[in-house]
Length: 581
Image (tube, rainbow, N blue to C red; front, side, top):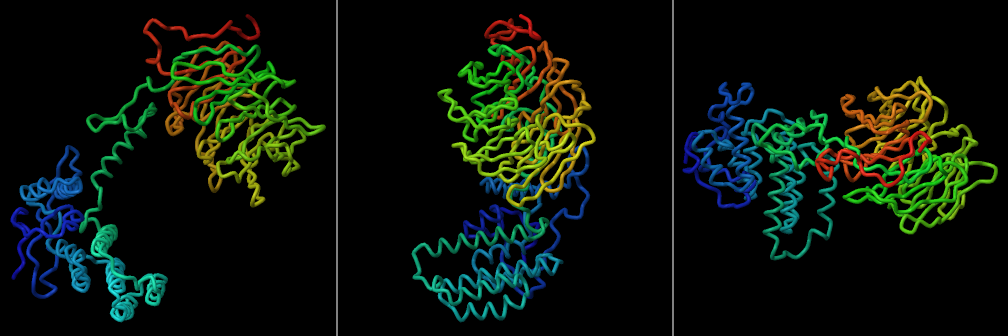
């Protein structure tokens, strides 16, 4: 029987009996098997291939490729008849006849014939041919062992697989299978099903290995569409909503209304300047610390934020707080005083960490919550068990009296300001020290959620973004905020931490797009310097800011106001401004 030309309508070709081939070849029909010499199986150019016919207004999409990818998607979605009709009506087959023969041979276990056909499907790279042949013959070997044909399997290994000189370590592994009793098992009723599934997996692996012009990769259309959506999303400087809200019907473009820029609530329970604040990891709580020697745990609801516990006991102003990994406990650090550990649920103080003759200046939790770190005013960093037992202490120039303290998510690196213009990254296991060196004095820093980036605030009113994964690299700079006298802190935030927010001495909150460095918002409202900001990690539309005006502002979307008439944010007490009533 002679070959059937590729231009025969798809509906008239002989369809395979194997459902697996229908699925893996995406339902493409196949012609009569071709007899004669191997040369008769040589792949001929697909119809319209080599032509310049294109679709689309830009003239960059080749029609043949476009139709084949659409047909592939239709078959993948289970629309077998639609895929076949597209092939027939367009005259553009998904696969050439020789590729369909090859796929059938694989699924039917005709290993020797498939290796011959492999060399006739248009491959030019000998390495690819050998790698694909290896996969096919490996499957043949394993199935012979499965059928307890050990001598045939050994012959295949010696005379067919080994001469390919491909993946020698795998060849040695296969040879060990011959003497392994695990392959001499009793045949089960499900064996044929398992073998068919195994051949399907083989065809999928071959599909990844062969050039896409011969076998279109699985999910190619979906990949192209996803790529287009991701590029649109990444180009949108205001993107701050879940990807499920993106649509194929229109080009994606967010507006400023996705950025929390409306003050929804003013929290006024502190009686002095608010120096620090931080949302819990789950976004359900907010902790703040103040010059009034207290810390407050706030509970976050959909409708607003309310005071849960006011934590008293420190004898000095509180410089920072730190949430435990499970958000059940909170550390508060007095300025050169002690560290206290609190139960979030009850507000009870569980332990006080102190070292005679020294004051604590910073604090942080280990990722597993079993120990804590503290910076001391003698410039050392200490590790403590939760019960207060000192585990380790790194002495020398490790920290400053005013410094942040971070631990990476893997618990290996401790990060602290060790000098005025240097940040120490200490690998506590490898005992290796690395340093970020700046030209200007450093005032504060913040670690990204994935522990790959560090945000560094400088005296010269710049914020620098450093990549600390591998070699230290300065990635971006952000400018616009004001800082002359006080410690101003910034943070990562928004969806996928795509934004940078910072306080400022001009009473504004500044927001930049992280990728482009473009300043996109400056939020008025505070009447004193904004010392610290924190973006809710569970809600990209909620931002908090702490100020010298004794207040905390909760920022959200404009459309979250309870009514169109509500222009002033809700408040929970008397408003203090710059020390006055």
